Length: 600
Image 1: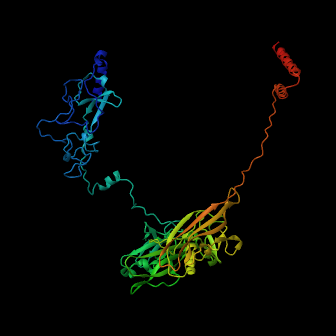
Image 2 (image 1 turned 90 degrees about the horizontal axis):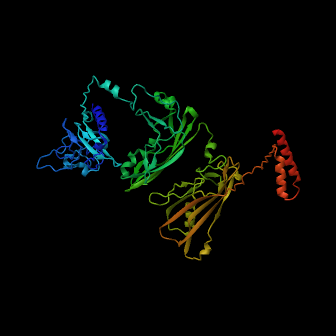
């Protein structure tokens, strides 16, 4: 109804003579209406308009705000419930209906009003030049838009904007009907139960079963988290993912934890069975789907003997044999154990290794270890070295939490430059023994003698390995009689290159060298700490061949046009700048003759 009246008003106003429409409007320049300053106002408001039907108002105007005269004014009478008033007795920021703010005009203090803190309003605006007289029964106002054009706006009294929905009663009769009508997808399905997959996929967690408690769980491989490397015991092992993790335990009272903490007891790592395939969950009584975990050797339980906790697990190694989609066929576990002294702040570093191999694989094949490429090295794979007949990975120093050198070392990855360091506590020994100890600490034990040329080098084939060059320091060059020259830094330089086809290049090691840096200390030093550093750098010496050049293609083009003789004559004349012009004149005469014959 209001839209029809407004349309009729516009038609009437357009029929008014131009001289009348050009009268200036007395309304001041204002911004476009917003929720907070355009809602219905009370005595303390700023808006005055003709709200009584039938009363004409010439040129709707805006009256500036006026202060109420000694009258008790309700600041927020239009909102019976203030949804953003969350702090009793305090003013909530941008809550324009909070009576604790004591603000006649919240927009003067707040940058905006929170949704629900003002009554919703609807305004309809037209160009102010179209309006001469307003007979609207609704509040009206003239505003200035962002382009400087005055707009005449009428406040529509739409009660639906502020309609309050009453609570709907829900009981056992209509609960299911309402849930079906308005509900959506659920996180869990009560009607359908998903069956377990028929076999493990790479990366899937490995299921375990504890017969004593009839509980299904996962095979765990604790890993270090945070800066201190604390053990996260719930980290699951992934199927076919052979990897090793290291983490640390810190004990407030080792005397109590020695025999009660299952992480220290070897029995807690094999007192369960492993499900061959996930579908074994459906029939836990069928032993054909379960594989026992067999300890390679007997490991004793932790025992507190005086001030020492004995038989503490420091390393756990799982060997898991798989047979494709037939799942896990055999699981064995071996342990490393140590003794801990009961003292405040005792810590324990544990290593967890899981290795997968094919079922019924020969022991000799499994001892050779995995390749680092076939044949060329793959970036990120271990750098293989040979000590005697033993193949292993080249390693760097690794520090413990207190900065001292740890027994466990970083593995050198092919193509990855790295640096590491730690502090070595020197003992009161003679200089030669001290040098030998530091050499062993820097390059690891056993000392690498050869390095694999390719990632699939066989220890039995000596031609697939190259010797590591080493340069030691000449002690006599120091001219020191009462000092000991010790190595403090080891730089491992690896020269490598790509060979083979450019479409499928293979990385190989061309050579390696150990470079030591030395420092002189007092002979037979007292117990002190010396910082040690190991660095590995890879240098690419690939000599790339010149790009192939194709033979020049001769594209012969024979002109078959009529003017070919003329072109040849002119070009020959330009090149030689000598000769007769009579042949050219003869050709021109012939051409003119032909043209004359055609025109007749």
